[in-house]
Length: 277
Ligand code: KMH
Ligand code: ZN
Image 1: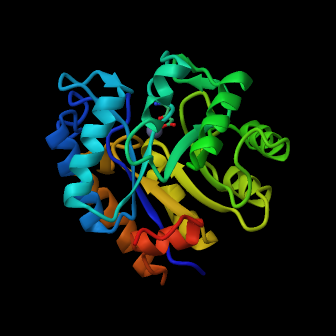
Image 2: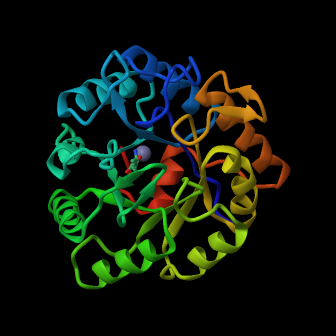
């Protein structure tokens, strides 16, 4: 089995300091959280950015500032900026995270519209075509985020038509968002059974499912995402002190199950990215 790639989703667009005071907003806080995750064993940081007051933004300049600051202290980490942003943002607003210099190695590409709590996360076919075109033009590898079973078929059909980048594809199955696909082993197994041979995949369990989905994922040979974007607790009723603490728990679980942890360079090789140096 390949080594385990751990992604830390350090910030997200929905969670707040009121829910956990360690959620990062400022550039300094975002760097602090990225470093804590990388030091603990994360090979990848999935990045959203905020204004200093916590408002989610997809500003190209804010991504540039945060990415430069993270890379100063974690020079080898793989950054996956969000093109999902926050519910209600326009496609053009969301795509700004693919405008940074240097271009990101990867970016998320959300694979369909879905309920998202009380809101609707809007990803129409034209939006997804525009995002796929942008990533093909710029050589950015998408991480295909699927929140629903049907999202997988949607994105595989688009890849067959050449509307989004094709093999080798990297999927992130985000399970347990209220209103979307539940975080069960059966659902995960169905999704994993239906990806093309040679693909790679990650699973993200939302809220209390963070670690109950991580365990089967480690055993099934997938990769794991954790972080404040997805879950604020290290255990029932206990807030996590940092993203690093959440990553450390996955590292411990993997060690117990006999799976090694991939460095960022090893993750580049597993994901089919160009070597950094
Ligand atoms: N904030 C969510 C509505 C992504 O990063 O691409 C969408 C999201 C997905 O977080
Ligand atoms: Zn995200």
